[in-house]
Amino acid sequence: MLRLISNLDGKFRPRIYVLADTDILSEQKAQAFEAIKTTNKSEELYTIEKIPRSREVNQSWLSTIFTTLISCFHSFLLVLKHKPEAILCNGPGTCVPLCISAFFLHVLGWKHIKMIYVESICRVNTMSLTGKILYNIADHFLVQWPGLREKYPRAKYLGKLI
Image 1 (cartoon, rainbow, N blue to C red):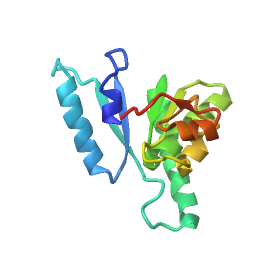
Image 2: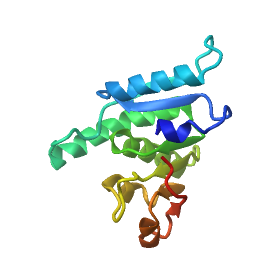
Image 3: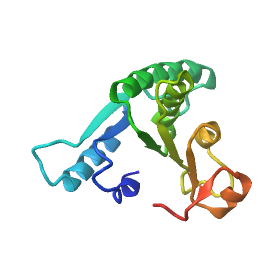
């Protein structure tokens, strides 16, 4: 994701990184990335927010329902707090609850938040579970292999993005 946003210009600020509460490595990487990108050190142009993870590795599917609902609740509060113009996402840990929250605001007529989902480069022939969930609600669904574009007509193939 950091490689993807490294080409965005300054109008895409402030950036809000939404991470799983157990994801220390991504937090460190985001802070290091922003330290390099920020020219004026006196003003922070990013925020890191954390939500509970929807599903831990090896967690049962039944209990995932409850942890995802908890994550959706926290995501909904974040979306209400920040009212972003767009959500750019590529991973399952926080992606699904965040996009569901944004979609819910749109359905209620409160705010339309553009959702851009980038399917993982390792998904060559089939979509991930996250991709399958977000395929019909994301405004832009980007794949990095032409074979996926052929299988999923709403998807856009722009080549390898990372």
